[in-house]
Length: 118
Image (cartoon, rainbow, N blue to C red; front, side):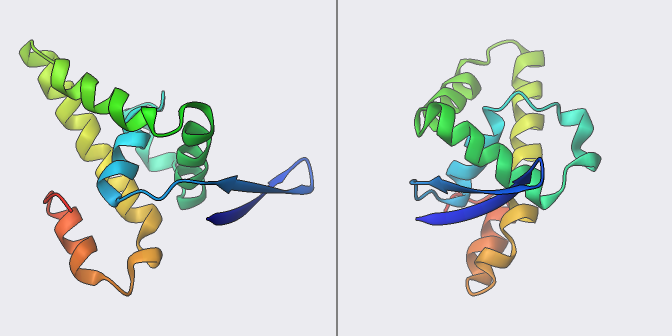
């Protein structure tokens, strides 16, 4: 169980997320958020981690299933391309946000960054 602290109105608030997820699952959780892919350059590591924690707090592991279903349901070429771009975007941000956590497992992170399932 990871404990995170964030500053809100000058007060430290402890947040707990009781989920253990792979990098692939974290990317699916981020995929399920309402974040706009076009704003990627503005997202910090803290923003990505908070977005994932918030999404898990709202929907739990159902976020993983919802994102998988959304990717699988894409039928028209535009939907498939959009889902593919969003999935690549989520993977990039998750790799950026959790790089330090996986410093002891460089092969896992490298495989994730290449797009290989963990």
